[in-house]
Image 1: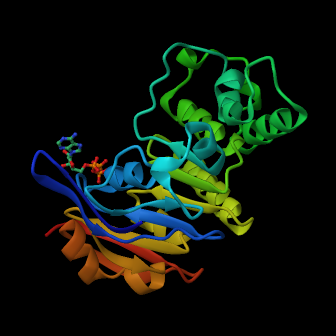
Image 2: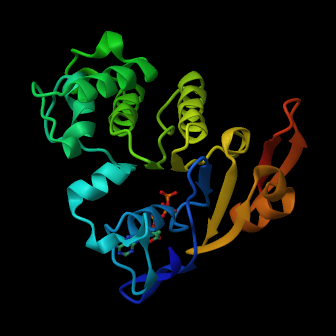
Length: 253
Ligand SMILES: Nc1ncnc2c1ncn2[C@@H]1O[C@H](COP(=O)(O)OP(=O)(O)OP(=O)(O)O)[C@@H](O)[C@H]1O
């Protein structure tokens, strides 16, 4: 996206945003509550139309893509994930294949392979037949992640995909995203845990007040001054043994 502005009732929610997602990169979007992260994702997906600027996907204006075309290019994991009715986990994950013509009970070989891989990646094999209204919040979070992965799209946009997950599954999910990026896909994930972001991202995009205020590798952008300026927190940043920045939040400024 280039030079994107978006306002609602006279209030600018996204200002002058320029962002290019590249294949092979796990980009983590961070910023305080209300910074405009979800709005930016929705603009990138063409779910909102910008007041100014351009948004393209694979070189085409995103607004000109038909829904099924878009669904083959990008998987979207929204922040609020309502399911209209309870269905078995397997069928919900299979919805990730709808852009390829799949329906529950009507899966091609490719659909079935993608479904099986996504269930296994998200450790859902033992829950595959469970109705979704019997799952815990974290289990349901993994179902939605699996649905996004099953689409096997070149691009994944995930809005707070790890928020409901326990530490083990948070790391597992970030590793899945990182592996997807290493395999050549482009991933953009909104993550609030800054150490988790710094541990796995190739690149961190920082938003505040609707604007992208920094964009770069974790080692280049995670520092105490930026954490104070963007989040209003005092924090100590040290280097982990693995070389990535570790953030210890001391408290609000
Ligand atoms: N339809 C709308 N009308 C008015 N204000 C809106 C609308 N949609 C979003 N906003 C406001 O825009 C701002 C940005 O919202 P957005 O959901 O993009 O933030 P966010 O960075 O994703 O926040 P969070 O971390 O809390 O999820 C918020 O202040 C929100 O209240």
